[in-house]
Length: 111
Image (cartoon, rainbow, N blue to C red; front, side, top):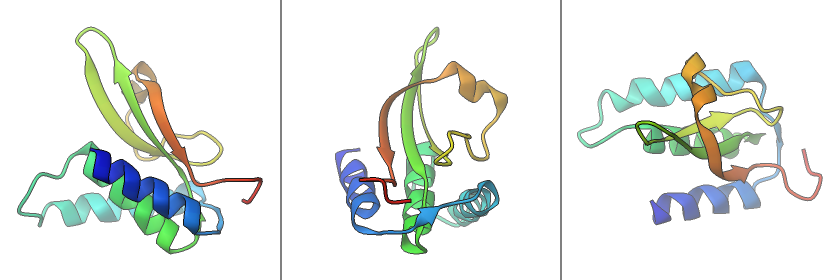
């Protein structure tokens, strides 16, 4: 997980751009999920959310990458949010997760 975090953080810091719209972010998440079906390895929320964040950053669009936890039973989940705080392509159960780590694509007032 450390390498994924470092990659997402580095990409989010170095690329300037504007906030992604909800539609742009949804398209990126769905594209990554579709590509995951052809991956010979594991493709779950961590890989999908990181890949979608990187895809959007590479095209000059900013989102927030989140990693959170839900209790009883304890579950971890990673997801993408718009800069406005809307979870992208997630079910209503995302509200059960408390973010414990976030990487934002907006730094020093750059949007």
